[in-house]
Length: 170
Image (cartoon, rainbow, N blue to C red; front, side, top):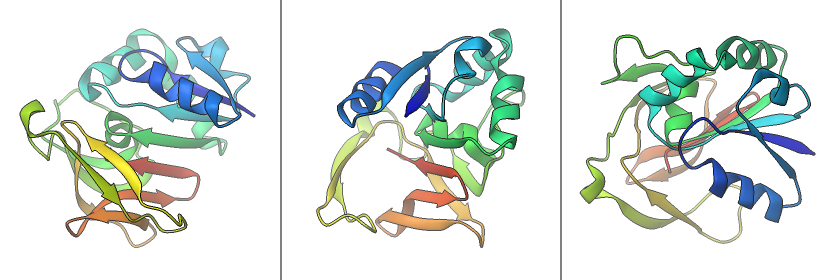
């Protein structure tokens, strides 16, 4: 399986390394032609307003939007969650996402860089806890009725999915 990793900014190299370790073939996506051969896409953590801007300047926004509309699966982590959410609080007015999952998220909702933390999460479907790192992570304020929450931290959803879209705050 070829899995694209949006490689415009952020933690794309770490995501590509983990995909490789899991047996997938990672493809760093910076141009529309690199998106053509992938089966799914990871939108990694990084800075969501910068990623939104780079999606436009790179010409990738429309190509990704078309592939997502055709049913390509996507996993958004941290900034990727923000790009997938229907509503973003504390974003820039010109920031645009893909509205793939019915949720409202608050940018940097867990605080500043100094407020970053690590924790072990109980994740539906996993036998063992999952170690999660939250760095200026988005805070989920609301999930829609068709969103399945897979993990929570202090009662707040941090891992969720709807259809072919899965997102994580960490």
